[in-house]
Image (tube, rainbow, N blue to C red; front, side, top):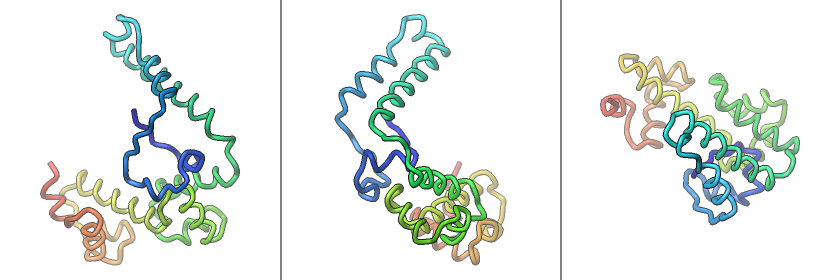
Length: 183
């Protein structure tokens, strides 16, 4: 079982989110395992149907949610702001700088930096960079004929070379190579 958590849920479960960033962490949680396993068991009728699979999945999500709610305290304003930070980074492609995040959230750049470190484990600039690279990769997959310079401009890069350098440093190859290797 795996779970992707919103930023507000991270600090109650992990002291330093940067330490586990981009990794899978195996946890020995027998109570959670038992609850999810029980939720996934169903009658023979449920197991054999597509709707049965959905019913079991819904019960498993509810079991995990109940477990999580029992361990994560009521959200503070800061935790809600951390969720808003992640939403803004992921949902607004016009956000290109940390200052854009600060303005969008109505806080200082230092507050944005502190929130990102405590709740995400990444600097806010790196969060923006990831989103831009994900958008670039998606555009290259979805529109193989589109000009890379146009993608770079659309995503706020200074030029195609800047996109290429960023792409290579994070993904290990150029956008052109990615385009060629993507089916």
